[in-house]
Image (cartoon, rainbow, N blue to C red; front, side, top):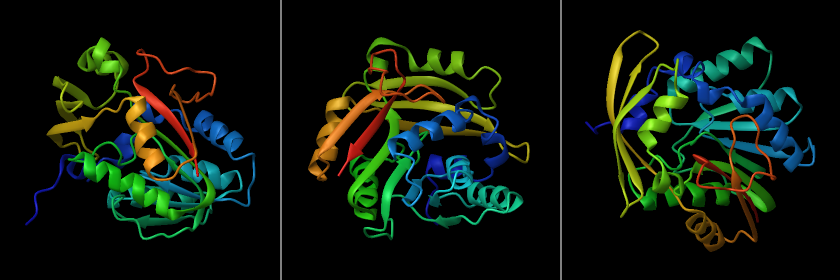
Length: 255
């Protein structure tokens, strides 16, 4: 039997607890920004990659948009469907691996927020497959909005100290972080308590990207305009120039 990757094991039974973590609390402000970027055009079809418990999918659907949410975790999707049903919303939530999306030029916009798959994969090639799959899913003249880990941050700061300071009161804890300057991967031990109260200890590694890498990857996929900003939780803005203080970057790419 295939060994589960850390991100598969993490999200197996972690939906309700995940929703309480500090980094999932910015949904309203993030959707305000997405709406602005889409010029409030409610005829657009949106793909939400790594939709998790459906935070953005549900909020955007309530605002009148047509959203398809995809995720690898059945437990995350189950909660997303349950929440949508409670609000009498019809949202197409589908289980897919972000590296192997089945869509072809079906959407006018894609979002991939809070590390929705990218950049959690084991290899750079797998991460690139996610960008390729999203691009294939988009029609011409579309917009792709996503956040990813800012590779400039660990050059100046301890990732472990940052996680400890920002996740006070959270269920997840991170320790033994080691940042590899050759691969730009942060290896750490993540401990969580899942929805059933079981403690899980996982060996994780995440890829941090520098802006020039992201720009080059997206240019190679045919994006004409690529803008990168600092990503502030719940307060995305084109006014926030990316700095070494930003843990995440906000990427807006146009085909």
